[in-house]
Length: 434
Image (tube, rainbow, N blue to C red; front, top):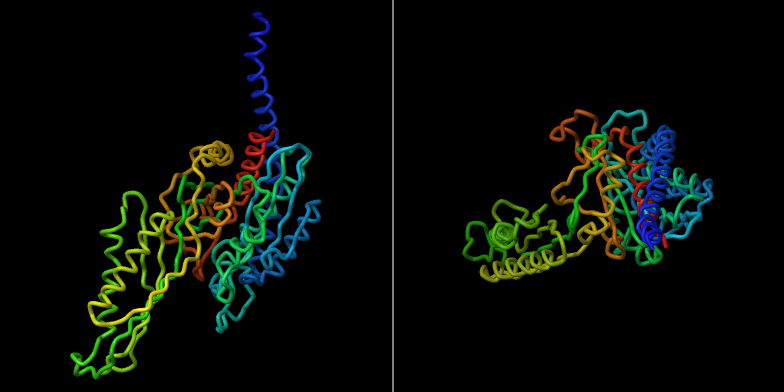
């Protein structure tokens, strides 16, 4: 009886020891392979940076990705959501399917950096000629995930489960399509056989070697705000003859700011309502008939988004009515809030700490930027992290931010990016294998 009890107690310990040993072996192999691939990943990134492509036009980038995945023996599907590429790596052991995502598109920005691999591409965007630049780091994401694919393909016989590599177009959106990017990929079924999804975003104002994360809402939902205030035109010398849409619009703009100061519980999550442009009138002495305003709304979670939208409608409609004006209001939902599944985040935190060192893991406040990775997370549990891309000792306050002509990434964090994504895969699949 004692021997049976001893065996009963020891079996879980032995299984845990075997699992830990196997995990350590895989991590050691990942570290070695990622380090060996660093120069190749940097070369890929620089090539993609030099030849950037706008959303749904990533033909060259997609071909580069597809050719690489095929060379590794990975099953490849092309033209997903217009120009997307999806690769499926099947492990040698049964287990779940983890998805890893990298976005491929660049921005209509003319690069000001004098790099040897500076962008050479131009394009027509929304009817305007512009330079094209990877001013958000998507070139880094693609190169890192190509590296991860090579790392994991080299150890597929020891992998429990499968890895789906999602190379996504049009994260930044496109002006001439109602649905694109991650939302379209989801609609086309890319998440149907996935159990969990992970993604990263390089950050030019976080030091190389650091990883930032947050449980729950990490990035905001983004909505477009369009307001047209219609009044009565009059001579500027006789304002009493008008219903002035300019004065009414100014009252609306100030009224909208009370949403943040009086309606949103900012101790839980922030929110943003920004008017980005206002157009009305043509002469000094004419009160115009109408004024158009456009802006952006950022919220965290469906409940807060509903509240903010309700208050926008009430404020805009009632202020206009009080002035005798009429108003057209359009709130266009774009991306939902990026929400890291709390249970999955807690489960995978040790993997991130193992990859970067616990002292290099930062718990951050919500980020008011937006990401269409959120559409993947609405289908299956997911975790999205930020990878440091600022040089050691850099000052975040003076480092050029994303979406600017001077945006710059230090490539010294690419190995950590490969390690972090690879650790997340092998650890998740190991824990969830049958």
